[in-house]
Image (cartoon, rainbow, N blue to C red; front, side, top):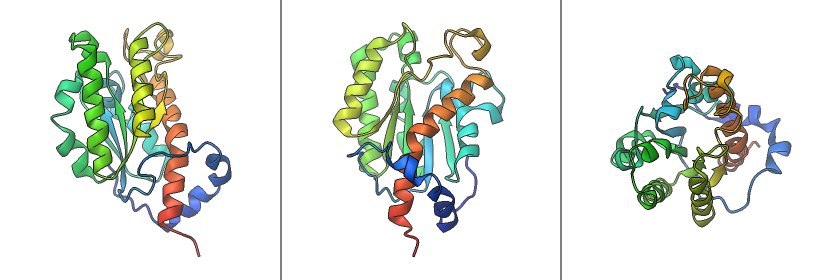
Length: 217
């Protein structure tokens, strides 16, 4: 999903209103803050795809309603990191990414992919996206009592590669039937919560990027 929008001076002016409150949330040292890309690419599995909700209920669709930056949904149902590294070029790097949100882990656990391989695959994704010049956000799928090891290692990767880190994506969802379409997938309400969490995490960096690239005279 990508809309034909131009992230130009009009968007910068619209973002100006949140600059002061956003600036205080910007973590120093995030790599590629001057990214020349044009799109936010949401790269993940069924949680990114929006399984359990209508197309306009996926988290990338909701995220698109919150930001003037074009948003691409590059999620695939059932995808593992083993398969995802094979599609980075076509589904991410060829989309002119400004910022890539990486969300994986659940299907690797189900497919019994070794934990170390999962972490190595995510690390490869981060490296390739950053080599393209994009900022990266690692979205941690863990929630209460699930995937704790992933949380620790994703956080470590985030520090190592100076990415944005979005912790505990499923908090308040996995334990609430009213927020889920089944035992492991959010419903439209759950995806809306995820979208707002991701928006709050990435918007300060999109704002900083916009003001560096389009200075208002």
